[in-house]
Image (tube, rainbow, N blue to C red; front, side, top):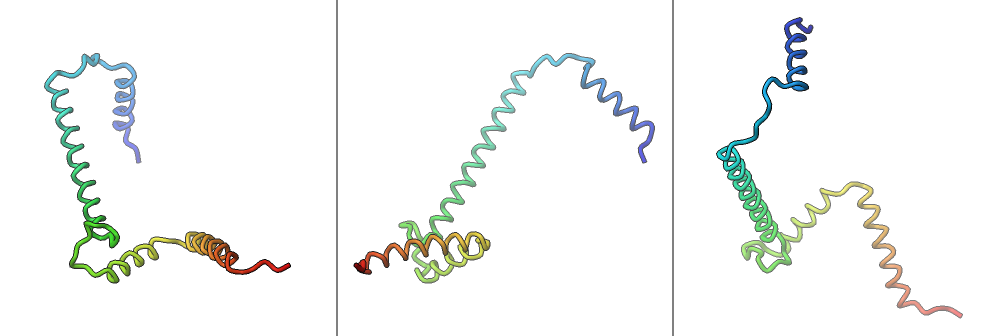
Length: 116
């Protein structure tokens, strides 16, 4: 249940938002410097995370020159195929099958002679 004090507080908060008691006079230089430093730090964290993810992706890609030599190609291809197959739904399988069928049909039609 809502208390009468809560209703009164919300009315006062709404009134304060629409007609504030004090006017906003802007940020101080110190607050602006702090905000700029915070945004710069956030950008660096995001850049580092993106670079780390790209390095991990390159290491797991079997066709990349930066692939780790410790992993075998068949093992990497199996991992890649496993990730590919688990990340797809039925519509994706149907679209892959349809496009493969069209491609195979075109290739096979090159080998068959046209009958007169």
